[in-house]
Length: 322
Image (cartoon, rainbow, N blue to C red):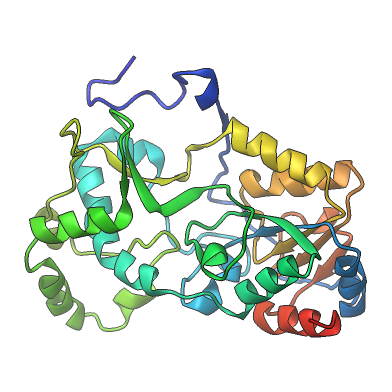
């Protein structure tokens, strides 16, 4: 059954393979600013040296690659991303999303793995780290050479039509949008001069960026090449959307079999990631959290270090002799 605009209702799965687990969180959650370490760096070395580590990574791991995260130190969102309901609700919302994403994705796509990504890959190759569960949609773990990566929230490398299910590459979609919107980047650059660096600072972890309404109104959003509808969506889990149940169950299985769970750069404010820390705690699997800000999972942590990821992970690799 479809809605009038051709988009399947989010809550109605079309088959057993597409049954989903809802993951929603209010935007008002805050975390304490006062933070304290639990354990030491040497304890982290000991934990990882035992092997069997499942990494759970968040947006904080990619900030050193120039991709800002959504949240401040207290866990509250700096910006409000478009929700699934908004995107699915109107052609105008989809035009706004794609106009902003068209500009922001160029900087997003140019990002390269940083020291944190590279160390995780090195530790995986050395046998200390096993599967990687990432909440990020940037593909930087894979770009650094990591394998066995579960993309909890999907990937910006793909797009999918919500009406007919056809997939497209993000690069191909970008080329089509460029052809359909001649001179759009130049008009953006002109408008950006008036506000300076403010525009660049508002790029989001999904490649989105703030744009003036007048620019958005002139943008031609992409249409599906198969069914012709404008219901093309990046193949990522929007806020308020759902993570496929099969992905959630796979991650639970990985956590159940882990020697330890190592959380890197996530505030765990959203249940989609936090539930794996809760699962590990329930199953007596040690949990180590390394990130600068407080996290929702601090109470369940076996080890907690408030530290920058790049230098800390590099030191960890050196301590392990790799």
